[in-house]
Image (cartoon, rainbow, N blue to C red; front, side, top):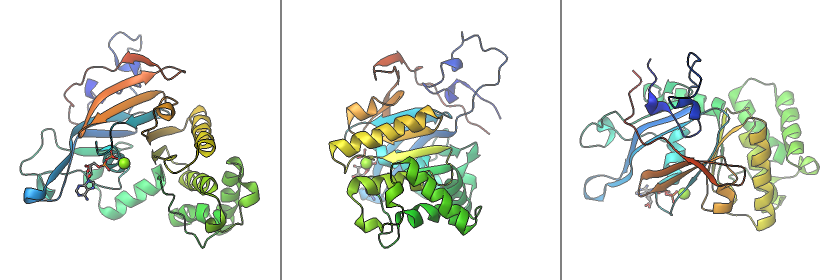
Amino acid sequence: MGRTDGDCGAGFPACSADNGQAGKPAPQPFLRAQNVHRILGSGDAAAHILRGVSLSVFPTEYVSIVGPSGSGKSTLLYLLGGLDRPTNAENGASAPFDPPSRVFIDGHDTSRLGDAELARLRNEKVGFVFQFHYLLKEFTAQENVALPMLKLGRLSKSDAMDRAAMLLGQLGLAEKVKRRANRLSGGEQQRVAVARALANEPAVLLADEPTGNLDRRNSERVAQIFAELHATGQAIVMVTHDLALAQRARRMVRMDDGLVVEDRLLDEDGQPLAAAPPPLPEAVQR
Ligand code: ADP
Ligand code: MG
């Protein structure tokens, strides 16, 4: 399995030639989109939503994805997290893509996984937070957070419930553990959704407009939680059209019309540090 410059994300200046890192093993991306295409619909109605996106996300990175509405941000996020699959010749493209359109999660080529295997990998390694929290409204906050743990099956019910209460406490919801989800405020529900996403200690947290439905105070709270998670080494990829929120990340990827058009590291103030390496042809991991 070869690594090439095509694997380098903006987050890893160590990938550049003159880095004093010679001889050290190169970091491996946790998520990698390789020439990812997504075509929805068929025939005259076919829409080429992603038109060849290559992006690597490394462990502990905090990346924001910005761009106009309809540019393909959510589509890319769901593909990176294995909620959807890229398009290739066998499922909708008129000709093969070169290199093939692929998503790798923790080194696994997801095109080689069946749906059940992919679902398991996702449940184990990826946490999702959506704009609409999708909590089970008749269940308590604690039960909602415990569910992914019970699904994964590593913890007993009582351990899962204990961990759920602990996570809710960390998110400032200790008093609301036993409250039914539909009796929580919008901001509280979104924090429950963050706790649920963290339930199985995901290697990466993927968030799609996590503050899109929140007022300023609750948005700030979620932004603060993400910053704290990042400080503890949690990898995060967050789609947002809120530029101030995007600047809280340490790397900003800009999309337009189904392509990545900019990829910059950010300093502590959210200002661009350096240009990402120029887009290079992705070498195929075979
Ligand atoms: P963003 O998150 O950047 O707003 P999306 O990834 O949601 O963009 O969508 C990208 C484009 O794909 C949009 O133009 C949207 O209308 C289109 N799209 C999304 N889902 C479908 C679908 N099921 N069929 C056809 N087009 C779709
Ligand atoms: Mg979207």
